[in-house]
Length: 92
Image 1 (cartoon, rainbow, N blue to C red):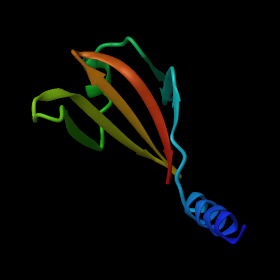
Image 2: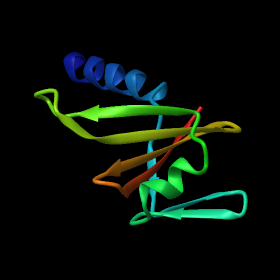
Image 3: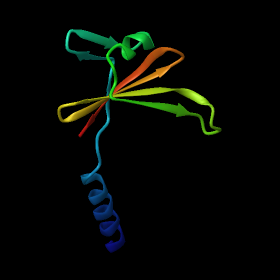
Image 4: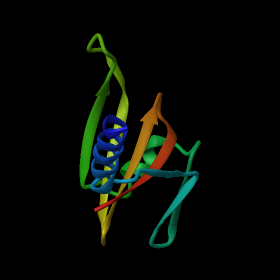
């Protein structure tokens, strides 16, 4: 019984500081709206704060992640083959 209680306490303490990642179909940037399925050019025109090249486990190119730092959150836009495939918000 003590082992179960200790395991539950460790699990609960590890989840307290965890950041939640929520993904959406679209995100607004001022007057512009970016949706999944849009072209990479539409994202680059917004001038991202950071660009990260995504790689496969063998080191090959798998796409790009564009980060936009907004107030109290980071918007991450994932692009593969020139198309937006995922838009996520990370609380910061």
